[in-house]
Amino acid sequence: MNLEKDYTDLIERYLDGEMVAQEQSAFEKQIAESPSLAKEVHLQKTLRNGIANQPTSIYQILRQVEQERAEMAKKKTRILNRRRMWGAGIAAGLALLLLVFFPGQFDKEAFQARYGIDLFEIERGGNPLYPKIQAAYEEGAYEEGLSMIRELQQTGASNPKYLRFLESGFYLEMRDSARTISSLTDIVEDNSVDNLYADMANQQLAMAYVVFDDTDQAIEILEQMEKDESLSPKQRSDIRAMLADLR
Image (tube, rainbow, N blue to C red; front, side):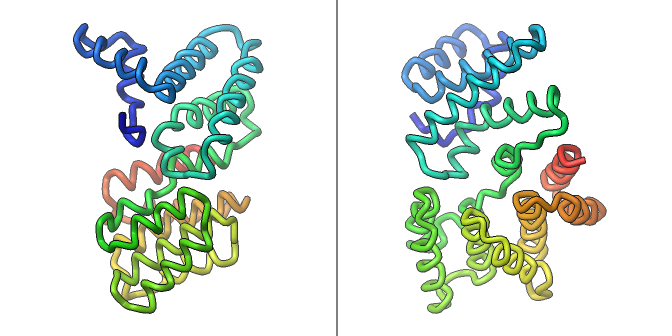
């Protein structure tokens, strides 16, 4: 079974009872064959029940969610992309509970998991080294990944704009605030960079400011982006959702 598939919509339809009998049977077979999918279905169901019941159950729900996240963290290093794929239910559910019951608290990890840009979808298949760089990223071998990026930069065999953007993603995961913000700002201010990379860099820059606890600066960037009429509908929707979460 492909764990990188996003099952969020299927899980919601399954729990809402919207599947026809044949589809429900096939999905239940997938649940039985995939422990990770079964775990997410269980968590989504638990979260729904918790929200529907009395608020006093919130602490039990949060404790269970945290236990599930701890178990998954033992099996995987910091894997942003896969956490977004099959951990989205946990992150989104925890963020919802915190926002509803504890509005003064903000989960930066959940925010990054929800809105972070998938670095490896942009130029997938563009160079034989890209899969190795992605593997290094997913395994937390950031210095190794950066070394391969610099090798490509020196040879000039790959899109230099993409490599700069990819490099900034590694710095963000390393929590290197100075190099993350510097590299993304360089991309945004480079007039030779097309709108695609400039917009993505701006959105990622706002994300970086959130991660590094400068929410006001992140909001300022996102508000400026929201005024840009050239944004794609999806990106505009993401920007507005990010602003709604941050305000």
